[in-house]
Image 1 (cartoon, helix red, strand yellow):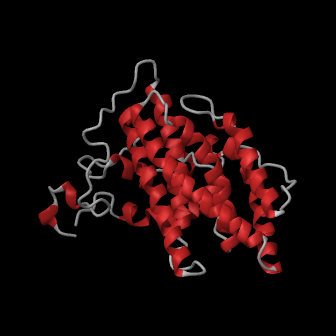
Image 2 (cartoon, one colour):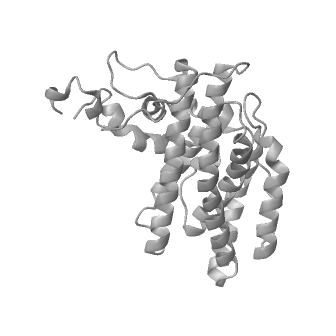
Image 3 (cartoon, one colour):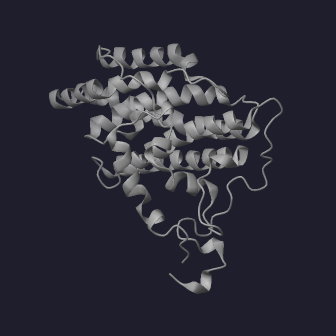
Length: 285
């Protein structure tokens, strides 16, 4: 740490040289839109992306081969970029959602939301937070997550909030690739060896109870995920049919992450993700 940078917020440890991602963009809340509801919706989408990005990034250097290692890292970066824009939008719409930090802190709003909220304040789906398993696990998780997220983002391109519409338009291209990557690997594992199919079916069985939350009703601003349930089911059924895999018959977990229901895995994930920021809440380098 160096006192010579005490007045230079661009040298803060967790965002060196980064500008406001919405600098120059009109962030005025559209007429008729409740700022608090817009912020809550952006937090929900942003938290989903942030936590899923963190889990995908844990695969760096651990994938079966270099090409898939790079693919997983790039998908994590896609979601991290979406998270940054969405958390920034949430803070611009309703500054009250940003955690209170020491006076004069150089921490940008999106970083404050990422690093200085506790687990019960996050609104991500639980599918994103559960601990990583094997390669089949990441394939199944990404397939379930991306099919639902893509359907929502496609509809958000016509959002009355121009910022959210722009984020969705960019996100559609990214998440379409995530879905296709996961779909191709799902088919490969299903039709590969006896062991690859066993692992795929085990991952699907373990993660399926979290799937219903992806299309659970979330009233308020934006696209209600419940409205894309039929489309999501149709896509998944097509993947299952082509792969020769049966749809699991498992009951969904009660509650949702949007209501603050989380697994113990989220607190452990955040402890690791947030440790440096919390150790130096006003750190400058």
